[in-house]
Length: 267
Image 1 (cartoon, one colour):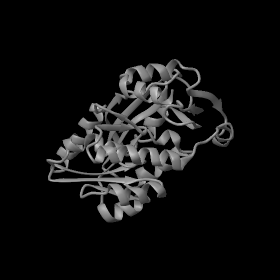
Image 2: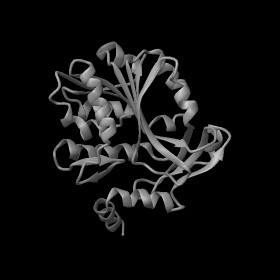
Image 3: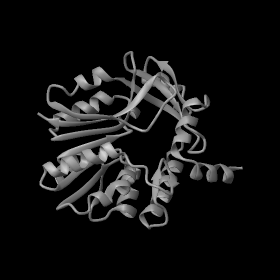
Image 4: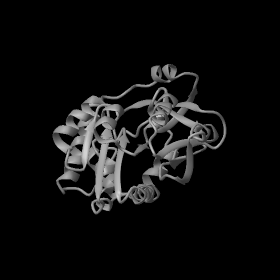
């Protein structure tokens, strides 16, 4: 049965799984918790080492040319591009003398890098720097680093060594206990460009803490996740950054919401 489910996941198109996640009441986003701790106590958590190994094994196949694309540890026979984000990254490169030097904060073992790198190999300079949890960094340095891809334990370490002009946050800020603390720190570091993708926003209402129940086909887990108020989120950047573009991401949820991306430029 498990083998059949894996074949089905690899064979069916992505829109099927977005539909499945939206209407399957056993998975998705649930609750409206007062605090992050309250949501964390109601979650079952996950085995971080199991997830790390699944991602590592999948991405090694992509790196070695045995698979085309990885997302959430699953392999696909066709790359699922975020075309607006790709356009934004190429726009940044065009403004920086055909150079792209970026931090991918929470970038796993290079999912976005392997997804999009062929669009950047012609650039005069191409440096993709991932800031991640220690175990990801250790495996990243050992198994995945190349002349374009580097891994760092924190933002300051990366800035000191590589001096990136941009930072990307894709499907990451919603999983932080204090997301606005991180955003304040990023704004204070004076990146010229800040880019977001796959970030959830409610159609109405204030920021909301939920629990995300992950489809067991990916891994058995549940953990806290934010849904943001879009006006509050945008106002947070308005004093120092200009919003160049916004776009809808492909992710969907079972709540009245939309997943979005943004491209900000320093004023």
